[in-house]
Image 1 (cartoon, helix red, strand yellow):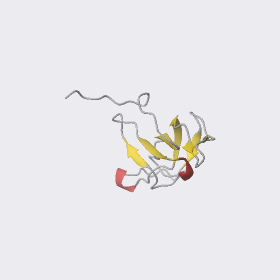
Image 2 (cartoon, one colour):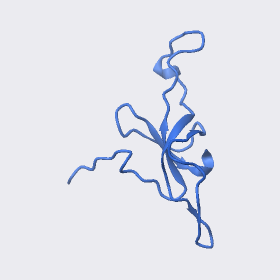
Image 3 (tube, helix red, strand yellow):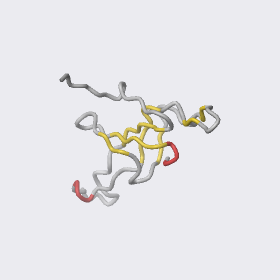
Image 4 (cartoon, one colour):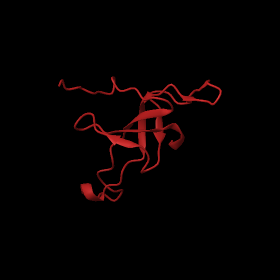
Length: 99
């Protein structure tokens, strides 16, 4: 069986889903204390890298999504599905309504 290589350019979200590149978490506190990996919180800020076509309404029309690729967004801490496509890049996939 052949292996499939996934990258950000080959992944396309469906429906009203968006694909977000998660920003790096803070390494230091405001006072200069270095944080270990276990004490870091999951970042809630990211950049949109892919957008689905939008949700289909009951009458069959598409409801478009009001965000574009490159927009910075805030999202819920535990929303979405986390994905690591590259060793250092972290992404999450979530519905538009959770932004």
